[in-house]
Image (cartoon, rainbow, N blue to C red):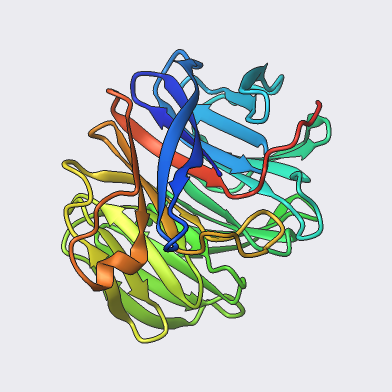
Length: 327
């Protein structure tokens, strides 16, 4: 299992999650986060990261995307295509039968979406989607379409096959995040402390969830669970089927939570050996790994922890075993 985090100080951090030891008398495992690399990969704060298998990417306020090979803990440089504005969101698309991504998609603060082929990494198309900057981008599990939300208070649908915008709708408020669930049947929009759950087919509102403070990161889990983190410093698991909180890890960090990764599936959609692991990153500079089953009993203790001494801004990860790849 691999994790990659970006920071305000322009540093990129890579970690490998490994079992430290296993007790034969029980299923208890002690884990450790082993650092793979750390260096200033950008010349401005890192805003977004993405991982699929051994491929990783980071975007920054310096208008560039950098690529990494986690299997060799090496940097592969930046993409030849430079954006004309800050990169705000990155997402890999990996078909279920492949361990390496087919495409990398990026969104930027000038309202453009760019589609890259991942073998090799070359630009296929870049086109305008929003009148103002894009805040977040979510790729449907089919790889045929994506949803974006922007500073223009609009929701857009992108046809990834034809490389153009196919739907554009004013939602009356600025959404900061948008995510598909694991099946692609639902999507979630986050605006301040509110989370709206929608049917993916017709965008019908199914329910609304409301946190205590502003939500800064969100990621879907299994069986309709949505994990969120933000200014309340908690990791909250929402049951989007009932519209209620399933459980919560209170005070997971000493500062705002900026990234959450569910380490329950690999890139092929298969369950891993540790289906209950969740990683979180905070602007306090700490990355932690949790067994979420402990949240039902008492205050959980992190299974592993790494201190970066940086103001972390984003987190991504992969459960699949890294294999070498080429560009």
